[in-house]
Amino acid sequence: MANSDAGTSSGNAGGGKYQVFLNFCGQDTRDGFTSFLYQDLRKNGIHAFMDDEELRVGEEIGGELLQAIDDSQIYIPIFSENYASSKWCLRELIRMVDNISKSKEKQIRPIFFYVEPNHLETESYRKAIGDHKEEHEKKQQEKLPHERESWEGESWEEALEGCWNQGLGAAKSQAEFVDKIVEEVLQELKIKYKSVTKDLVGLDHRVAKVLELLDQVRLLGIYGMGGIGKTTLARSVYNELHSRFGKCCAFLADIRETSKKEDFVSLQKKLLTEIGSSSAAESINDVDDGRKKIGEILGGKKVLVVLDDEIDSDRALQIPTYEMKEMESCHAIELFKRHAFHGGSPIEDFDNLSVDIVNTTGGLPLALEVIDDSKVWDSLKMAIKLKSLALVKCHGITRTPDLSKCLALERLTFDDCRSLKEIDNSITMLTCLLDLNITHCGLVDLCLMILEAKEA
Image: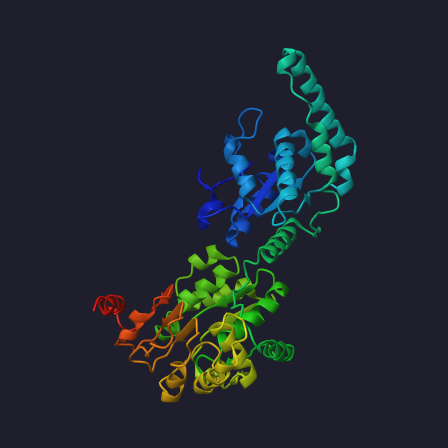
């Protein structure tokens, strides 16, 4: 039976499709193992579907159940003693196997609950299917010839045989088994995975160095100038390591503001929520209470925690650190060209321009920090065929540059240019412009000014 939070789908909490569909025999595991598994999946942010008995009406699988199966990415059939006695279980299994044959993105992860994989072909399962066949034949005899239906049992047996060698490994106890299943699902769905930009250049050796240091210490600080890519490095290291820690890992992003407000209780709650202890997080009353609960839950466990944007310099001096330095010139130029020329190699005329811009930004990988050097802007005016220009976090720019010679521009970005106050009229000449990004700029009426410039 599947549960969907008081009649609504718990899997829909994320506003989309289910990630996991639980297929099981209610009389064997509903109030025990399956319920524990379902709750643990939910606590870890996994949108799982566990159907209610009320949904099972009549002989055919209803539309809501079929939709839940079709929407799910991972199927977990729980094979137990009486599983094959349920035609609902078998029919759901057929649907899952059929979906897997049509999509490489869907997977099945069977669980053998107090039965061995070869149990699926032993007498108890064969007897259950034999009973279904006998019942089917009796019903067909009562129907007119043109109303009779074919026997579906052969498909059931094929589906069961296909699951023999795909089961999730066993554990010493049900609690350990649930933990193991959740960890494997988390890893498969990459729920703990942190997104990083696709245009990573020169980062591999930095990640390797940090991993090497973490083999020697338990606490490590990463420091460097703003915009150097510390968060990207931290995310990449986290992605390399999180699978070793299962549920016990957390990436607490952008904690600077929270630290300033001394709102440490919210950080404690976020930590416990990320490791799947949301109920404990909700019950934290103050900092001391939070420390106690964190100690009780994480004590004796291997834990991976990343604090992004930490600013406590006094504490940083007490721990081993890794300094993230500027990118090497060759890597910085490669990164700039990927963005400015969409991954292609620019014509020779742009080589000097690329070098000038990279030298001006000081090898910062995240953005062009301050570009108000006349030499660079003069070079930019010659970029007749430049199609994309991204000025991100250019806090020194107060006026948009003269782009009258960049008539081929298709994409122009002024993101987080907080000092921007004036719009150069040359922007109205960019007839090829398809995408203009002006988010997080200090000028609230920037859009209005651009429109007024075009109308002038």
